[in-house]
Image (tube, rainbow, N blue to C red; front, top):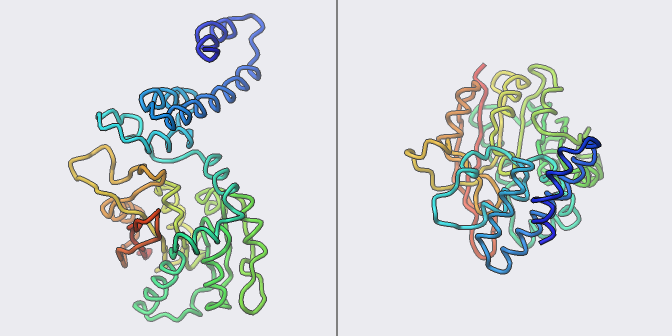
Length: 317
């Protein structure tokens, strides 16, 4: 009731007041955003899905790419065709993703690897080695590696152990994940990463010189990014000729007649699914060939397998 009174009376008065303060208004919006999301979660837990959807949509009126509201909306199976908001979701706000992994960092490996049997880092690294064999290149040919969304350094450690001559640079949105990865050591006791930056993946790549990187890897990263057009565009710029991009994606049932999704969809689990067509199309548009696509089980979610694919792209020029 207090929320409705604020919407109906306090807000209109505040906005037309001669003493209207932009800072006060932004502060109110931030508080209202949290309140709408919290009210939505309460209604959802009580089974009042219609009311929950209403609150999450109100949150999105304040911040159109708010990760909390979008993920919660995606998790509600409404079966009424009203998916106008979700059908246009291409990304989640970085603040949401960063906070998600900041909160998860202390138990990340114990839960992900030991409980959920996560193996995305192994899949990506094995796919990279297979690609090098096909190209008749040795692991020593890889000198500069970028580990996007490096997390706690699971993938970086595999590279550092088997490719000791490679210089591995990491980047992650989560400061707490970065703090952990900076402490990670190889089996020889060396730092796994030469550097680890707190940054968005595409923004980080934009700081690298042209044709300065041999390989870019991303294990279970694009599922939180959504649209990877910018990342692949920057990857094409910084990679050497025949440079490689290796990553995992989650699958979803894509129907070609569904023109709105482009083969990219925010799934009910709160992660993005990418279709094979989407990856092939966007890779081709940025100057990459799909060197390999292998369907696989990425990890568990509850008792169910999370189905996806490990992909290797090769830069044409």
